[in-house]
Each structure stands twice: as structure tokens, then as C-alpha cells.
Amino acid sequence: MVDEIWYYAGDRSTDSSWYTKRAALAGIYNTTELVLLQDSSPDYEDTWNFLENRVHDATNMAHSAKQVRTQSAWLYLRDSSSCLCLHLHVGLHVFCSILV
Image 1 (cartoon, rainbow, N blue to C red):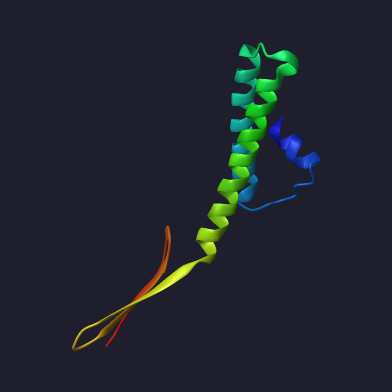
Image 2 (spheres, rainbow, N blue to C red):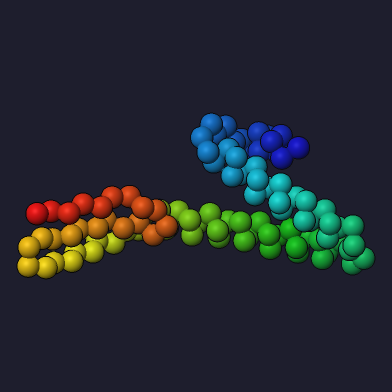
């Protein structure tokens, strides 16, 4: 069902995001369904609020992950014989070299 939702929403991805989008939506769908089963609020207001908050959380997480991928830091450590230059990406091990 989540594949159909993404398809009709216009998603045509073929990379690893295909899996992450569907996994995230499946989690949101399943937990919202559980909340719905126990919801006794008028017009299922609690369920709609829960769903809105989960979508907001997923959007914030995706935005944060994108920021982490794009930000990097350079660290230079010098001693008397060499310079160690590390290009660090938060959460990603990219490159390490020793210059002599």
C-alpha cells in the first residue's frame, strides 16, 4: 500500500531513497492506524493530530539528514615531521591521508 501511495504522490525514485521513503511511510501508517483504533475523540481529532506530528517529524529528520551530508569540517593536525589532514563528514567516513 505504501508503494502505491508514493507512486500516486509522484515518486519515481530508483535509488536507495525508494526504500527509505517506503519504510518511513510504513512506520507512520502503521502507528497511526494503531492510534486510530484507540481514538475516541470527536472526528478522530487525536488521530489527525498524531498523523500531522509524525509527518512533521519525518520531514524534520529528512531535512536534518540532508544538512549533515552537506556540512563538513577540515581538521589539520601538525607535528614536526608530517601533516595529517582529515576531511570529516559527520556520520560519514570519507577520506583520510597522511602527507609526509
